[in-house]
Length: 95
Length: 394
Image (cartoon, rainbow over all chains, first blue to last red; front, side, top):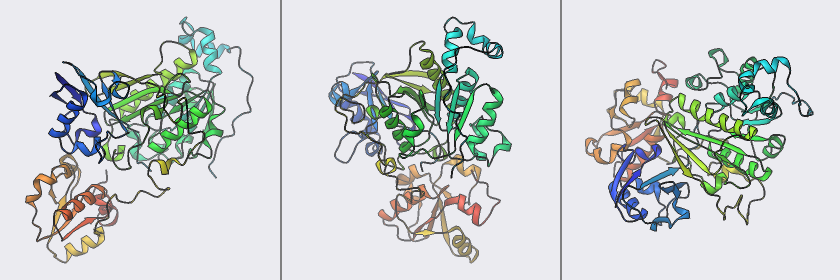
């Protein structure tokens, strides 16, 4: 299954400035593993030290939040899009 | 004490429009979707704008233009020269003025018919509930995580819709939180990112027009909520990619376990949001890492003395072109694979724009075994302030 992972702007610096990457994966988790294997620096931004997805990062399969599907075990099909949506506050200095 | 204009005591709802108002809003009135009934809803609406910056600019302008009868602006900041790249309510002669004062003057000029209140104050857990309670719609145009959580929680506690918009560089998000059947901000993001992980506009930059677009979308949603028209963004996260010029939409579900708005909510009052977000107090957060430092003046005297120092610049190439200290440029992200370009027997001073990225570089290099390395405190900005004002600040 060829799936496309969309990389949000705040994380592109850690993914060779790319805005997306394609992987062969049967689940969301596999696609994300593919992503963090290819871009090692992304790992610490997406996952905690004990391997859990960080709470301020949401992952969507197409338009559904994976928390309401099967999380990282959600199966993927050809042409699916996985989106990583980190929280952004937008504005000047965080005070 | 922060200055505020005294809000007028609550008036009875308006039931008619003056001839002048009818003429002013004629382009609304001739649409059956708005009409006299809709315009009266706008006239009787009370909207609170949190933040009069990049998002607040189009928000204030379009809501005032539309005839929202009572508009209140909350912002404690003053207009800065760098704001003019995107905060289009302000003009060059507003630099240095409180934002609420400058915005109020502009909006009043646009539409003298409406009531504009200003609260030149920081929104805090102590004042949020009191400020919010008189308004129908809260619009979040803020720029930091602690305030976003505060606005969310206060809106949910009071049952007010929270029209949310946020931006970063060339991406934006918009949705409506706080409706009883819809999700809240915590449903989407139960926890904030640790400070320093997501860069601010000053560090990451932003295309000036982006908050113009996202703020306008927020204004549109606010007006639709007031009119009860169209389909609103409750339960929908609108994502805007300005460079690709694409809009996408994701489903936002109400989290049944949300501590704020779920079935068994555990949060019943406002908390200390700075603590929640890991930002202590009002002081500028210290560097994320503790590393040996040298001040710009110390660096200058050592260079003048002829000391053999290697200046390492960890900024990006486009920043080097703005101004530089003739250092050796290795962008921070490339440092791990280009570390062989550095000679650990030499004394190295690392710098960036403000001292944060270079602190990370020094920390990395010390862990890699470099012993003679220091961070330039305050970066090239501090060099411009303390040593050579000809170096432009950006």
